Image: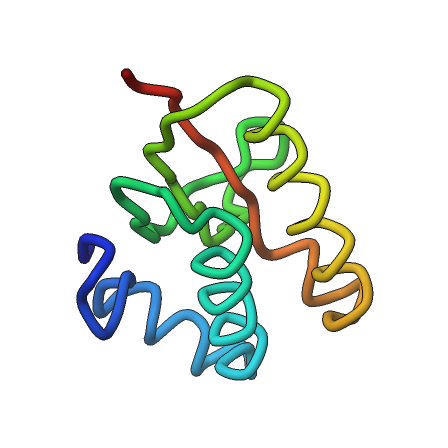
Length: 104
């Protein structure tokens, strides 16, 4: 896991997972969109997580730490998902999830 400001925000397991599933381009797009849409993010990390509803179904979980007004954070999230819908295939989108914590 890497902090914002580093060249990468993902660890070896995420990189290997994306390579093995052909998602290198998709993960690069998501990383760029996160930095674009959530400019003020204190931290962006990526890790593999198991879907709680489907056993053995791995996803890349992008975890953000953000500050700001709720309306601006929700606006950034909407912009992010709008771009994701335009740039990634429906299949690619199923392997990625975004979670965030709002800090002061």
